[in-house]
Length: 217
Image 1: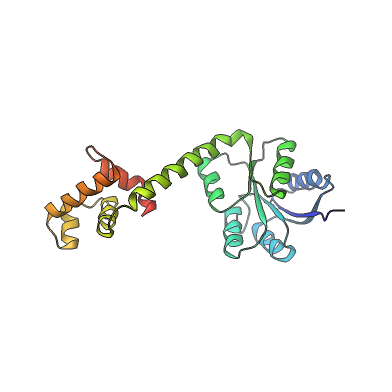
Image 2: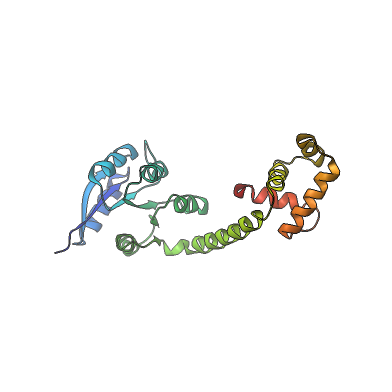
């Protein structure tokens, strides 16, 4: 007989939490080893019980789901996190993925989706609600674009990268020249070289690029 997969559930709504416990406990391979009604208690359970999976509501008293995910990541704990939330927001989804969350399920989803998620995560896979699958497509596109932009930025010299950073801070050529004790013509030459290396052209194109990609340098 295979060992059961230990799971903790944290949600501050007792009725919803009880429903989750009953739903997941009905599957023989899963075992609920702890419940919590707030984030602090959930974090303590993760540290003490060392579960394979933690199903967390994002918005809880004390530590929220993101706080817990950050702490789990910082402490390199082996638990796989599933967020079960009412928030259908792409920004929150991306934040969760950045923290290494394995599952992201909307509370409005059917019981089958929740069980499919737990099963997938137990098998080492990722799972998100089918209704927000577009978020994953968008994320993949953004990551690909970021990788391409990062590769392009790596072609710049250290000085050019510094100038690009200052452009992102909306500094003028004169302000940049004063900072580096060089002429504005030299700064303009640097700007032109940066544009050529990044293959960007047009009025304000460099400023737009710098503002959109400042997280990459």
